[in-house]
Image (cartoon, rainbow, N blue to C red; front, side):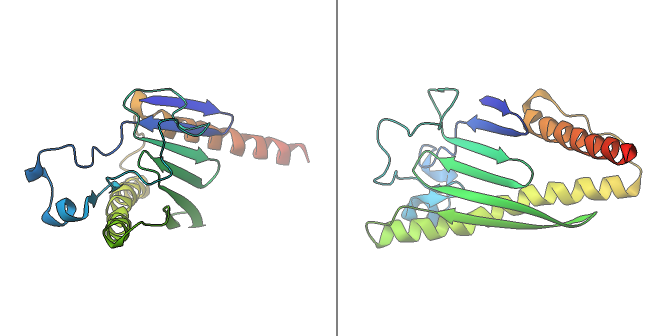
Length: 181
C-alpha cells in the first residue's frame, strides 16, 4: 500500500481486486462468464499498456491495482489497473445526511461480452458503495446516540485521519476569522 498527502488532498494505492486470479469456486457463475465482478472487468481495456500514465501508482508498487485520489472537500477518483475509473461525490445536505453519487467510465467495449462485463462492474459498484455508506450511517448513529464519543483510527486509516485534520483546521480557521471581525 502507498499513501500520499498533498495539502488538503490525498491518494491511496492498493493491490486491487484480484479479478480472475482466485480459484474458480470463489466466484459467482456470472462473474466467471462475464469476467467481471465486485472490482469491475477483469480484462484490461485496449488503453492499458506496459507503462502507466503519469500520476498513477505514485508509490511505484509492484502489485499495483488501483489509486484512490481524494480531492478535498468531497470528490474522489478511483483508477483501476484494467483501465477504467469511477468518481464519487459526497454532497452534505444536512448536519447528519449526505447525497452520494458514483459514476463509472470505461473505454468503448470491443464486443458484447466486454460491454456486459462493464455493466456487471457498474451493478457491483453499488454493492461496495452501499457497504462503504453503511459504515458512514453506523458512525453517524453512534455519534448521535452520544454513547460513542471517540473513534480510534489505525495507521491504515491515514486518509480518514488526514481528512479529519483538514476539516478541523478549516473550521478553526473559519472560527478564528469570524472572531476577528
